[in-house]
Image 1 (tube, rainbow, N blue to C red):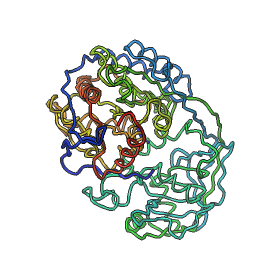
Image 2: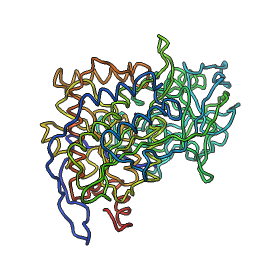
Image 3: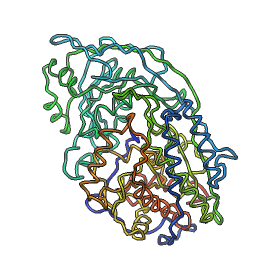
Image 4: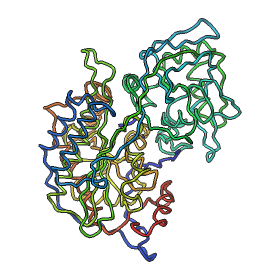
Length: 567
């Protein structure tokens, strides 16, 4: 789970808006109310969930890094399980879609050296900073690159906000704050949706904008609260091989290096420059902030092993009976980090059991249940995508090169890192209040006797960190629901404690391993919800759209108006 256009998500404030509204224009221009059929619970096998999760998370799969021997095993295993579940190959007779990637592995990292005012400073790779290049070059060298503090590194013309105003950053390294300027706002009101992170707050955007501005390097200052994870996650995620999408001849600019610097290291650099991190942060939160040259220069270097390779999305389909050319997606990413920063006991395999062997196993278990129930009127597509951890690369590639036309894709359900903390009374809705799929969710929750809770951590930007976003930004309504925190045993306190324990001790680390003592009852309850959502969409005659005013509504309308089939 990640950590994958400057679209701004308007997350719901207070209770989730789950009002059913008018459907998309039907053929002939008429408008119809949403058709949300009742469906029976599915026969979902807990044994399948356990078996698939255990297998994918085993050391034999080596952390399921794209392009590794672990990928080969993963693709073979998922193909076998999809076939056994009763699916058909989803890509013109093939189970896979090729996804061209580049893997760049940095090595021989020199210290991050800072010179200028005061005594020279030197920072250790891993402990104090991490960095990588997106360029396919054997060596990365930054020498005496001027450091400039650019606040939150945002250029948002529609908001009249430009942290780069009047600045030429060619050859320079920009120092950037994580998240948005108003992330500490208690509510969801503000120029950047207050507490709720927008895409402008994500590290992916900040590197993209630094490159567009012509910077040689970009360093994000890590702080646990606005990043929503600790330095251990940054160090583990950015060490070892990094996968990127292959770039075409007309691709945009790239920095020489992107990276992170620890808060302690950043404070030391700024102090040497006669600045204070807290004071600069406060200044950067105001509109009209001007970038601050630090009078310091950065130098570092490292070498890169570069290889191009094909990774793969795995696609299975259960063809529909009445409308086989209308499609409902189920998505989950099969990849994880492979070998990563070792734990104290020497374990260097990031097994990714919760993230996301559980979600991948859910694809298999749901495929089995839908096949047992018989094909619905629309086709069900089960899509296990690659390279989510590298920036939603597999999902993005599919969305840009769809096997099934997006205008004929009704919507979908995304599953990422299922909760093994036990059953919850609620579910957490990521990006609620955005589309008419909320009405489907309301019906499914009512049948299950559960309630919806808005995202408790909108500042973490989860809406932009999983595969549904790749489809949403191209107009396809996608729903992303996570296990709730109001646990049947222990309530919200127990749920929050379980979530914090996972984030701090296992997330993106070698200890995200399969545990035979897990309580699967909550997972199975959540799977029934996913089953109902997918089944209802597949049995419906409606084409749910984004709500009026949503940033993706226009994209969907344009897509629907362009073709004769589908919406």
